Length: 200
View 1: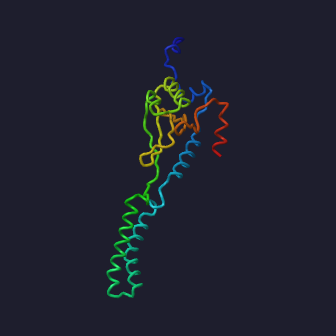
View 2: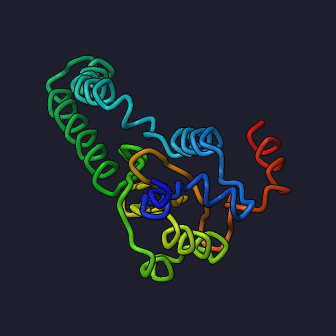
View 3: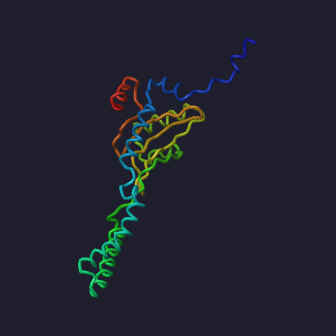
């Protein structure tokens, strides 16, 4: 039938199609992966957290050992038993003071979390306009697309957020930033070579 083409549903626009139409290059997947790995190494678990079992055993064993050493230095006389107990007690109090005041930090390390966000929240989330503006435009143009915000969580701090746009079949990084500093963002195709340099 000659009119079939007029009523056929239009092919859904993909994120890649929209980027091509605007001559934009997204942040490469490899660049984001390297960035995430580097930041996770940088903000990894503390020495004390990684070795907490060994440190705990060492501290427990050290308490009677210090008491015995003090007793031995006094020749295990009648006065040395009180000194032995006192030195062990002082050692335990010292360890309690160090751990209780946070001088030894048992930091578990940072981890990445992703959550869905809406376009109207981008300003509230302090997403730089160089990333937020194309994100809003792509959401309008690509049916079924949604935004995902990735954040590096360290205790209560949020570090190095990144913004993705995704559909069921695609997942594209639009930018990575920290405060006012943009590390990488969607840009004209002419600027694509900057990712090759940055990824090395």
